[in-house]
Length: 301
Image (cartoon, rainbow, N blue to C red):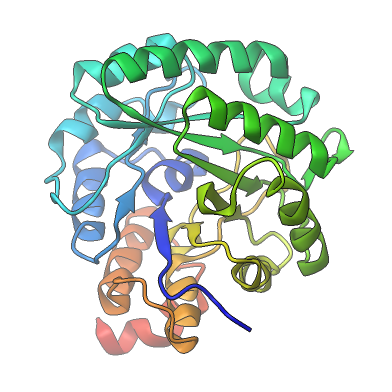
């Protein structure tokens, strides 16, 4: 069995993690958190979201946070944008990488973006076109790729078709999100078999929530299939405010620990990750949702 020699980890905790916390942290805390993450060797840190504060008040200070962080030249700092207004706000503060999102689920699209899937793709097309003109790179997210809290099962073929549309628009990477964490290894392999007919594996990332404790085994299955990009969230922060029951993302500490044990390179310093995870967990008044952080954290602190 051949696994990838190197995995790119996309850290999503400052955005996908904090957006689902009831507590709203001040910008200086977020900035310090991202600065800590920037010292870990992570190649990509999704920094914030330029979404209306009406919908995501936890990230209303996105402009201040993006401008306040110490940007490591070896790190990419994408931000999530839902529409042209969000893109304009991102451009105003010098963002160079953005992420857009849609879903194969009509019901989830209405709940999450207040529009149909087709309408969301039209919005994305406008954003991508403008981003190209500004030489801004665009990553695509697909939510609920294995199941929807409103529609139930999702057909892999539909995921593949929308992924292909995003790729043709100009997205450099497509992240497949198991938003409610219903995936299992056979489902993951079936999904990747179908989607890879539409989108070459080198453009695909996986984004697994750990609702039922399956995220690591699902990542292992994706690695077997040849996936080389993994989204994760330090301390296991995250979830989706529009998906009932969607618990946290898979913890970056646990992912790196597993990959280290498999001899797969990430370039990420596990000890520094634990420091960052413990910092943000303390700020939120909770313990890290990471078995590795809990096991090793006291010795490192």
